[in-house]
Every structure is written in C-alpha cells, then in structure tokens.
Image (cartoon, rainbow, N blue to C red; front, side, top):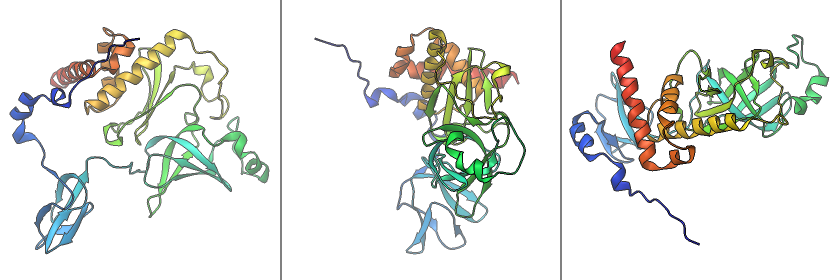
Length: 300
C-alpha cells in the first residue's frame, strides 16, 4: 500500500527576497549569554544578568529600553496575566473552597468558590453544602471561561466567573497558540458570521464552539454542559475549518482577533479543510489575510 506525502523543506518556507528587503527593519534578536551593553549608567531588567561589568541576555529575545532600564522580551514565554484579562482555563484540582486551574501561566491559577455563580444565578453566601457540591459545579478536566480578578505578588492569578457569560464550556475545540498573538481588545467573545462562536483567551487558549441561541446563554448560571446534544455535520466542518485557519494565522505570526479570523476563514473556502494543514496553503492564507487587513488599515 502506497501513500503520497508532501514534504516542504525549511529552506523553502522563508521568503529570502522579502527578508533581504526588510533587513533594516528586522529587530535584533539576542541569544542567552550575549552582551547587550556595558553596565555603567544602566539598570538591568527582566531577561538579563550582569557578568564582567556587562549586561547580558538570559533569554533569547528582543532588547527593550525604558530610559535607563534594559530588559529582554523573550520570543516565547508563558502567559503573564493582567487584571481584566479574559482566559480559557482547565480545572486541575478541586480543593477546599477553591479550584486549581491551568491558565498557561508560570504558576497554577485559583478560582475561589466565592468567585463563581451558583446554579440559577443565585446571590447568597456560600454554605457548607455548596462546598460539598463543588465537584458537581466544576470537576477535574472541565474547561471554563473566566476573567482575571487579581494578580498576587508571586504571579498566581485569581479568577472569577460572576458574570453569566463566563462559566463551564460545553462542546467545541480548544486551540492553543502563543499568548502574544492574541490581540487585546474590549471584546473577546465573538459570534462569527460563518456560524461559530470563539472565545479568544488572552492566555493563548482559544475556544471554538457552535453558536448558541440567546435563550441558551446563562440559563444555569454558567454550569450547563450539553454533552449529549448532537452537533450537525455542517457546524462541525465550520469549527474544524476555523481551527485550521487560526493555526495558519499563528504559523504566520499574525495577530488573532475577530476580523483576522473571519478574513482567514473566507480566504480558506477555496480549499478543502484538510488541505489547510499543508505548508503552501497555510502561507497563502496568511498572505491573503495580511493583504486584506492592510487594505482595511489604509481605508481607515
């Protein structure tokens, strides 16, 4: 039995002509141990250390200067949360009056029992009975959408889901990208015209799901999870195509927000969903999406 495989060399994935033309605009990338500058007159910041009276990079990244403060912003890093960020997280452990969740950050985050809506949206003090029923609300492995309420000194995030738009996630696909690629905007919940909903987590976790009707949102205080409901084939195909489009944009290092994702989806319609995994198709979608976004910026 023979199969056909498409192999793309790394050499062919780089546009050397465009790279040469933009050489002056490319940021200087420093490697760990490389000298940034002499220590005299400067202060070292994150991603640096001092050795032999020189400030050196401790991570691979781009240098940043703020007055006399020298730091290196790493090319790849864990999510660093800020108050008000929208995140998609996975429950790791059920503890005493709290859940421990994974938000793609350096440390596990916390979701307190007092920071969640009770079923039905009741507003009252949490009782011992509520603590005993915590696993019925959220169990290990459940995916949730939440907002960062506080950031502790050591970097641990405290989350809350007191709004009905947050809570347990039902059927859909989780896509993981670099947190820096998710554009910070006022809205991170979007119902796209293509027929699916996306939650763009600032932590790099993106949730794609079928679009819900208005009467289905918030009815159980954020704990509804209809895993037995059958999702139609056409909706599953839209979700799969969106997932491949988001990964294509991430591969091309394009910022992810509702407009860029919708443009990428429209550009992908000339291909089959499975073809979106091929390298030349990925870069074609990236180029076409970038061109449309550039045209919109020029019009504005």
